Image (cartoon, rainbow, N blue to C red; front, side):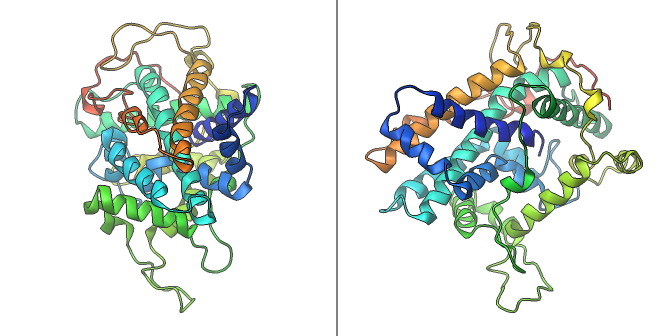
Length: 361
């Protein structure tokens, strides 16, 4: 669940890229009309959290080295089948412009932006923050914390130093209804459940954990499940992560020593004054992809953002074409990518190249 500010910025920068084009095709105008709605934009922003939402339905550490088991699997090459199922559902409606379909389409576009953001940023982040060389728990914990701190350092750059500054609001990423029920938007919830059921049915039981002791008698476990809880857990966790209370930060740091807890819940954002601008690579130092792509690269976080948004917009347009005729299904090939390594075949456990820089806070 790292990099929430960065993923938010990818959405906004991609929309600005659309607005800045001189020749506005009907596909471009259609996309801008979708994102012009605050509610549909909120759905896209929730989609920008991508598979990370599955890190928030449990608090104990799972068997994976990086987030929950479902989240790790989807990042490590498993997102392709899930995205294909989402695209097929969104394009299956006869009326693709009704409110239900529009919410799902916006969520899908946000999810795609997340995968692209990860595919562009993660190789850079893993090279400079490092990754474990063995299965030793202490080593995994150390590198997981360093990876989170590195990503939060990038988030702080976008919040406080980059131009234009990121105007970030976590509430704008959580499409929940008001009132006592506080349900996740039902069309988004339906898309997630149906797509997971189609692509990875073995995971579906994890998403149907009933929430008991609800006061409202009309809410059944079938209507209210773990997906509805997730936005509230996200809000609580990030309230802690953004805290400036030094004593609370020290308590959370001590709790990270207990191996059964997710370090993801306990690693706070560095203070603004502790930002490490050197690791942003604005000076264009050479770096390598951890695996699969040979050669050296000179990308900074700014150039990564630019390239990521250009790719994201091109994928949006290919899917948007399905509203007005045949969708460009080459998008499925573009989405066949590992969100950790930025490659197609190589996964997390095959990474080799790194040059770790220690992030402190």
